[in-house]
Length: 414
View 1 (cartoon, rainbow, N blue to C red):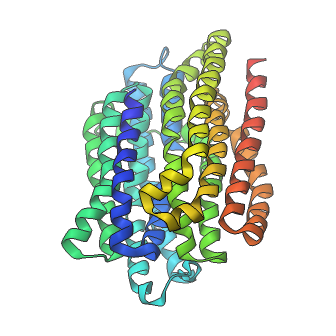
View 2 (view 1 turned 120 degrees about the horizontal axis):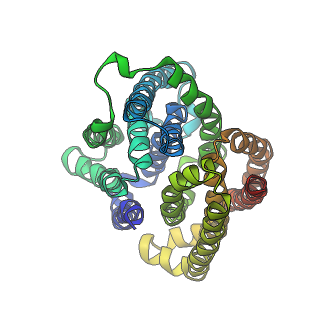
């Protein structure tokens, strides 16, 4: 329930604030802003899977680790997460300088704002990766109340920060993104104070051996973390390139709303991850599998009801929320994505179960295999059917993902 509150309250705020942003900054700026939102979220790849590795390692060895060992794991993991975040920031900055941002395909008058906005977004990378490491500590200790209080603040800042920026400085996109970056560093500091009791204060708490163990798990997590979010957001970047930045808004706003619905299955699976890790490490497969099966059933009933409601009410809801033009262009997209969200929700359970067993390799390879198939199909369907084609491709990928992950999870049970 804390997980639902931490992610659900910002969703409600977003429903109220997106029409304000749409009215005050226009369809092109809001289209680019949704790309920035996606990009900042995607920056978590630069933690090299260390956040999840910290959670898995501390939780799976909870029965055997001394306090000193847990401190070493936590300290080493957070230090590495911040360090690789700095390196990642430098890499993205260099990429922008070398290759530019012409792929955004927006009005030329916005070029300066867009360039500055993406540079500001680069500055969020170290904060994002270090926060992921600190959150890994808190999740291993099942401190979900504290985690989600901070997540609530961050989620609210994603929408309220841009509104404050508009009120103070006008519709400039770079100032809006600057407010998002400041919020990320505020949340980083708050996470540090929440987890500092588990973090050492000297070099003796850093361990090369622990670094190798964390990177061994995190390396495969990194591949999965690169590919999996890319599969989620590749559609909007291809739409911007093939169609236009304006069409991104008609696709991304309902898509972002759908993605936020994943807070419900995520609330279950993020709670179960440390429990799965502990149960599997102790060879208690019957209990872990019972939780696995029950979670699949609950998510299917819950998200199936949500998806059916969206299919029935998408047109009316979009018309009331954002107007007739949005409803005409986005209703079919929302309906197809709702079905995809059902499959994607169910896939979270085997995904968590597999990684809790310490096997990040399988999920990475499965996602790599999916990307080889998905990206060409996505491009083809966008060219043939526009944003509706993108929605169909995403839905088919989500179904395929669930089937592959569930098949692999059953082998762990066996």
